[in-house]
Image 1 (cartoon, rainbow over the protein chains, first blue to last red):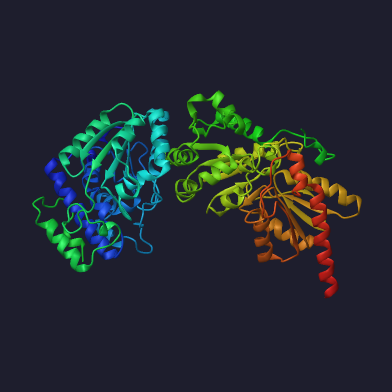
Image 2: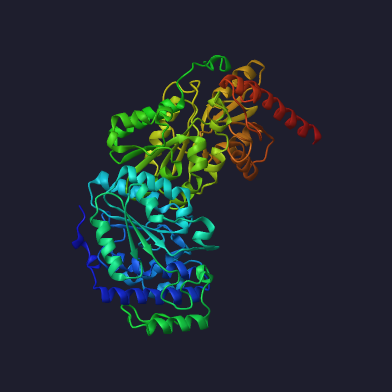
Length: 296
Length: 329
């Protein structure tokens, strides 16, 4: 059995500190995308609270010094285009130097444009072809059950991603196999590349669809850290497959990006970067983690 | 109906899928890390033989090939050795993006068994006859692709798949196959062709059901004084370049034979090796660029030119080309 004592990074930070963490991760996202001159800010920012809570809220029992520790919990970012927020979290957790975030998307970097297992430490699955992460999570959950281990598997999916048939194969499969250690989280930011989800291929009522697959479902405000922490606590304690539908806003945290789908896959310019970082500095959350000395 | 009439002089064995199920069950006794998944074809792929013995390590995921492949990736990354089975056309074609992302790209230690390869599936028709799977599997970086010829070679291949660290695809067949080997070959290894007949006129490089056909062709041509070498190229990727080079240099002409489309599989792999080492005339026995139809396995193999007769004709064609080329010098 794995134990939560294995790592200090499994200890839970206070809500206030988590909010400052999320603010820091958002700042890293803006800086690294601006330097890379490409990437997906909208879906990275919408997932900031969920990713922060997983890594720093005590839910993911992991050890940045031992990324291959067999009994670590697993986090799969199935919506792989949001990987900048995960890289920011991994760096702040100590998997690699924060300065390495500057290499995002460049040749010879470990920080690939979408997650690649075996490159950056802490990345558990190769994703970016949407729809696949939950199946991989089911396999990890099955392996944990066979080992008699209590490893938790968290999978973060996009809402647009839920248009993929494989997601519903996995949802059906999870509802049937009923693993105790699998949590699906939907970053329900209501937009996909070409526009509004409800216009292109509506998912509503999304929570009802997961309930119909016999998953236990809770809907939360994905930007309210208190609700995120409570939701994850419920999901982890729940017997059987649990799904958190996190209502979010694409681009949340940067006023000119929030809710504007232009920012699905466009990096901020130098000027936009400066405006965004200024905003994050002055929004009252403060920063917790590496400061701006890493950013040229 | 037995395919025996197509393979005079050879004893008929069981289908390679039968050997797959048996080998899996035996391996399960030795290795607790083996987990077997099937997508509701366990009775046909024979993976039920493992499931019956080790129900805790067997999961019928239902009719969900994509989900099954993804799960295998997750199992492998957690230290298990998943063997996943379905019909070749379903696991490779429906699971292809998942094979790319969850298996090939991370180099996951997943073993894939595609049964019902080729047109010898028979009466069920084209939707069940996998004729593109080898080309697709070969396209995936790092994937070992193996098409065993008989039940004994299949046993060796399944064991080798467990020993190999990384993804392996084994294609098996539905129909009982002629016995090529008297016993399980001791020197089996992926990427090492087995030279099963010596000869210096032409080399026939075959895999799967066409190896038996090549043995029949060998006898027929020997009676005419033409000695063909026969290679069982059970591994299409990595192909045995050294053995191909020797064949080209020592016999001066090559015929490939496989139960698959012309493009992208054994013929292509051999041609690439030949062109890079010792260019010689080549002919190809394959399904060509078409789909087959419903019919008995025997009728289909005959109609679509996947027999000893077809190999004999190809040998004559390639000999004629070589002679014409020599005469032109």
